[in-house]
Length: 160
Image 1: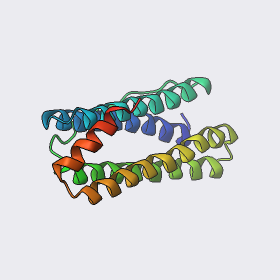
Image 2: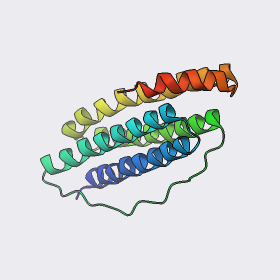
Image 3: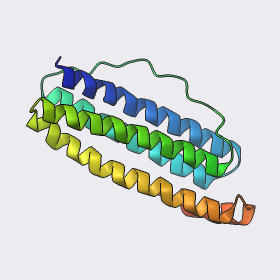
C-alpha cells in the first residue's frame, strides 16, 4: 500500500472513530432528556459512517483492501450544551486538518484520482465547520437558558 493509500486508510478509520464520538454525544444528550440534540448527533454519526464508506469504496476502487483499526472509547461527558458543540467543532477542525494533509500528499504524489476524491471532502468540511459554528452561536445567544435550549432541541429534532 502506498504512503497515500495508507494515510487514506487511516482517515477511513478516523471517520469511523468520529461516528463513535458522535454516538457518545447523542447518548449524552439523550441522558439529559434532549432528544432533538440526540437526533442531531445520531445523524452526524450516520454522516461520518457515510464519509468512511466513501473512503472504503475508494480504496477498493484502486485495488487496496481497507484495514480496520481498533476504535478508542470516546468520552462520555462533554460539559454543557455549548461546550459539547465546541468539542464537536474542535473535532471537525481536526478532520479538516487531516483531509487537507491528505490532499497535499495526493498533490505531492501526483495522484489525480485521490486529489479528485479528496476535493469532495474539503468542500464537505467547509459545511461541517460552518454548521457547528452556527449552532454554537445560537447556543451562546440562549446562554444555556432552558427555554432557548428547548427551542433548539425541537429544531435539531427535525434534522433528516
